[in-house]
Amino acid sequence: MSFVLQGRARVVGDDINTDYIIASTRKRDTLDEQVLKQYLLETVDPAFAASVRPGDFLVGGMNFGCGSAMEIAATVILAAGIKAVVARSFSRTFFRNAVNNGLLPIECDSSAIAEGDRLTITMGDEGITVDNRSRGVTLAAHALPPMMAGILAAGGLVEYVRRGAWR
Image (cartoon, rainbow, N blue to C red; front, top):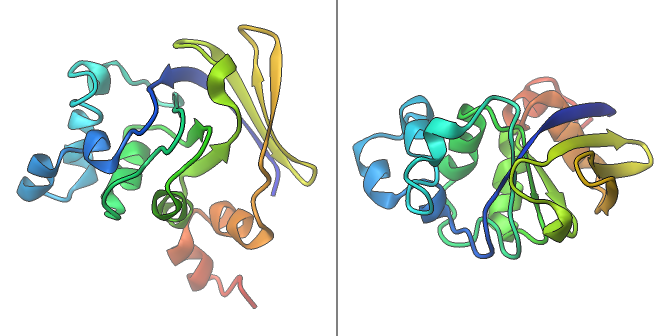
């Protein structure tokens, strides 16, 4: 699987838990990600969801997606038009929920990325790189296992299974 994504960095901090991504009080009303996307990260920044543009990337620090295991956190990010999250580390549950739903989780040192930086993410046979075009820095990211890359290429686990891609 090879692809190139380009977009703007939207930087959040360390320990962004799933209840920060989408508040528990919002999940009580609905689990429709098209409705919930208007509340994305409202606990961190009430104006955040309204400022997101399709193609933006979330950039976190350590332990992104910690907290509850509800996959709605990953699907709300996708519904907002964000195709990838770059972070120093992820909660294992969030990482897997992201892959299963077609959201690309990229583990690398994100400290050289600032709000609004222009990023190019390249995934190929040789691995994943994050080029920060605003700062002239290229970051090497952890490669994904082939099965996870295949799930992402299919658009998520359901489509991967539907296609019989594991055979």
